[in-house]
Every structure is written in C-alpha cells, then in structure tokens.
Length: 102
Image (cartoon, rainbow, N blue to C red; front, top):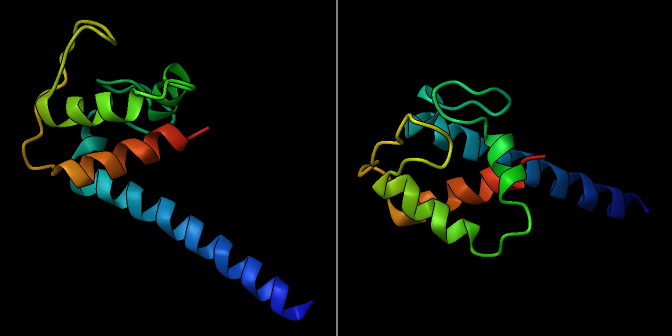
C-alpha cells in the first residue's frame, strides 16, 4: 500500500512538472507576450484554443504549423506572426500542452 502511494505521488509530480515545463517553454518562446492561459491578450487564451479544437484529431499538427509559420483570420483581425525560433518539436510540445488545458 505504501509503495502504491509513493508511485502515485511520483506520477503526479511528473505530470505537474511536465505541465509546468511546458508553461516555461511558452514563456521562453515568447508565447506569453500575446497569450495567457485564461485570458485573451492579443491572441486568444490558451484555454479558449483548447475548447475550440477539442475533439479535432488534426488540430495538433495544424496548430504546430501555425505556431512556426504564423497565420491570420481564425481569431480575428490580429495576425499571429511566424515564430522561426520555435523548432517543430517545441511547437508540437507547446500545442499538445495548450490542447490539454481545461
């Protein structure tokens, strides 16, 4: 029983640490300049993005491309600039994190 609790506690720490690491990656890649988790700034709140794309199995790939190349029109008149400093792997990590938000 004690071992099972330790395993569950360790898994919870890993998950929360991973979520925090992705928030840190979003800060490091300047995503938080235009976005926040809960509120619209220039771009939509990450939770609003997660809601909009919930159940869309193609969303992660589409959004990862948009992170790197930029885009416009989906969330209004303000375009999202290209982010060439974000690698494809980092874009996928960021988008996976955003889509996991509730």
